[in-house]
Length: 343
Image (cartoon, rainbow, N blue to C red; front, side):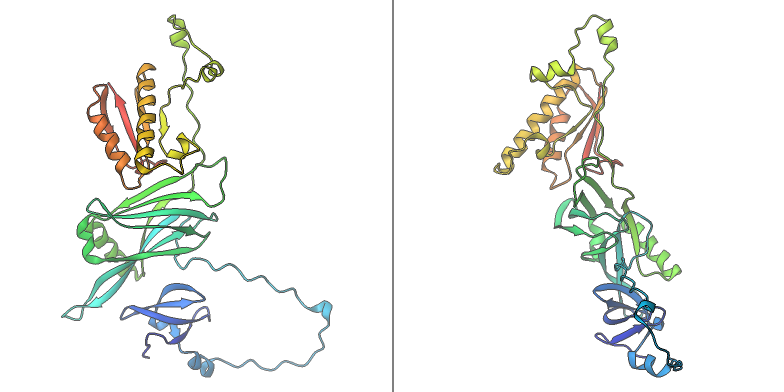
């Protein structure tokens, strides 16, 4: 049975009709069913007319009168779920597309990247593809509950450029009890990709995936400090109400430098003005951390294009009070935060 691109087909197990969009390899095609695209093995498809000739015809039943009160209510059509079957969470999925080499062996030509939402929550997201540390592709869009979103194609050769896939998610419908945003990212090596390709080949699966997060986090609580030791030592401790009345800020172990956290009136500001405000906010809470003898603090700078992170790191390298600092993956902040330890 020979299929071609554009053929109308019927899926053997579900009976759904679709159209062949492309061929992934000699055994698998990409099929579109009601706007959802997913891979299907060739032996799991039939031509519609072939099914009509091979399907058993139902025997006519004896004619019976049916009254209105005997009719069953129609069932509502279920929402189309994602074609990717994964555990709950949000995933980055790689769908390899194959070609033939001179020895007629299958080789990966490129990957189709999908963002897959296996949660019942709708998100807005910003996505950055970084190659060799530089932003190569940027995208903003929405991710529906239980659905998947096609991002772009990634050529196989670009695995040599240390690709990094960074995301910033927010709830489409804001919730005061939930975090304002969630940052997550994946940095893969060519060796990892080769291992995953071998795994799906042995399991006869069409794709492999990396989980970005399993649940969207709650809003972090502000940490309170126990100042009883300072009071016993003779220091004067002011209550929170008095501090606010005097327009003074208290020390924080977690400082968010997103501009919307610093000022409500920022839409008219230039990028340079925004950066200046963010650095001033950092310096203010850095000094407060030293005054209150904090042993460490976390600065949330986001991912973006990395300008704020780079400037902060340059400043920290010249701070004599800094013992060390690191920007690594954090379960709550992704790669968008730097943790600082003081001497």
